[in-house]
Image 1 (cartoon, helix red, strand yellow):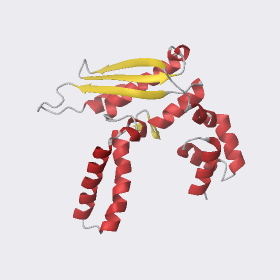
Image 2: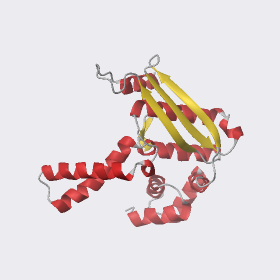
Image 3: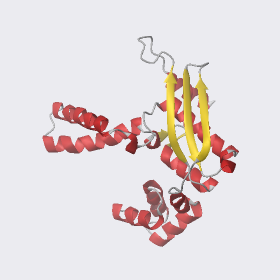
Length: 215
């Protein structure tokens, strides 16, 4: 049985992500040393160490969908101008731009969510749980679970990757770090939707973006 303590220990020893640590331990039937070897072979342990390095190069990518109905600008940084010009890096940035177009994130990461926004969301979720008839202690526990779902809905790095829902965008980036050999960070983005905020007939642009990706 793979325990949370085992995952924590492997993460501390390798710096790899929790999902990668869990997968490694599962693959190696709980053998810690073999799990470490597995992560090193995959390059994920090294990728986690690179994640602390300064990334000041990169590109600003644009993605326009539906003849100008959705537009995205995203800045993704790497360590060198050389890597910024490689097809692998540019493909990653294009995929991230399409993710933003389809999934409508509001923030890059959990850390970017303003505390006042988070507190307001917690209060709404707590009131929902109380209105469902849940005791206060249970309601408080439910709030934390629902906050995690809120992060997955609104934070780019926490979202399921549209091309492979089995992984989060953060894991996609870690895998790219392992392959490319440099730290990669999404710095900022802007998403525009035609007529946003104007009362009109609602079109499901996100579904259209997904349909285009699957072609």
